View 1 (tube, rainbow, N blue to C red):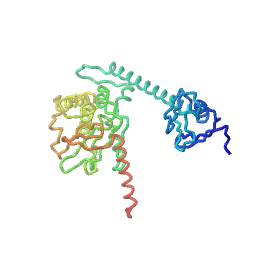
View 2 (cartoon, rainbow, N blue to C red; view 1 turned 30 degrees about the vertical axis):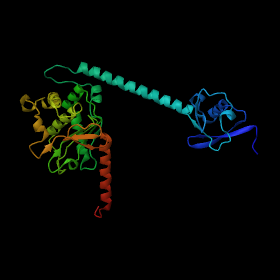
View 3 (spheres, one colour; view 1 turned 45 degrees about the vertical axis):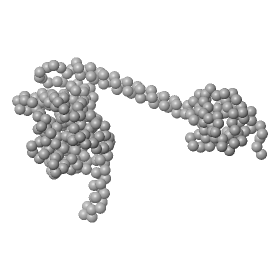
View 4 (cartoon, rainbow, N blue to C red; view 1 turned 135 degrees about the vertical axis):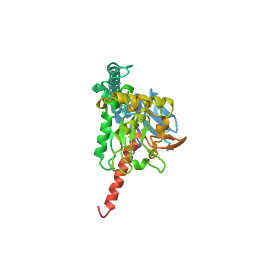
Length: 340
């Protein structure tokens, strides 16, 4: 038999119903005080959604008796508690403070690196070797090298990518233009070859990922290093300009000149005795084999090619996911092959 001196309300929180017992003369303030101790939600963070009436209630709560404002006998009465426990609030504040400290530290490191770069890298000189300190190298570089594990000899591809990453000329140009690329990876020739063309490089999302065609079409060897480095200069220019316009070609020519001058291992000699390195027409399609150097810079999740748009996934995640899918496919084929 119910105690007439008490009332029991059902309060819903996080999808669960909780019975709450109060004195018959309790006020809505008494209810919120009980809820604060039960769910560890401070009163000022509580919101009560009461249906059908009086609707949403929030702090400061009125001192009215529950029997005066709630249809206690109505089967349609529903009270929903909204609010975040104090422990979760503290965790969120701690996490936010830690994120803010980390971001401030990173911003300070980048600012310091840029200041050192301006003082250590001579500007306006016609020649010479630019020296890079370790901080510049750590910031303006390729932060991850990823060969395609499903292709033969991935260790050789990794060594090839590492050579590009450590190339003194590439490092000089990346430091000067403050290029920081999260992922440098190789391109699967089979996925970028048609009867009409062969893609040599791709820049996704203005520098999120750069893909290079390292291997020959038959996977039996690797293409010429200096040709691939030339393609890399082209893709680095896409970190600034997506379209193949005049600004893009000027920057591409500038980057390769900087790469040649900074390549102290090979004497800093320029191809062709100091002539312009690129003719846009030569870059679009090579005379041998119909190679297409790239398909313009990718922006967001769309690729622009000949005025047509086609959907693609987000840069780095798509590259790594595609490689994982290919490894899984080859593993399945190996299990099904009775000769394996």
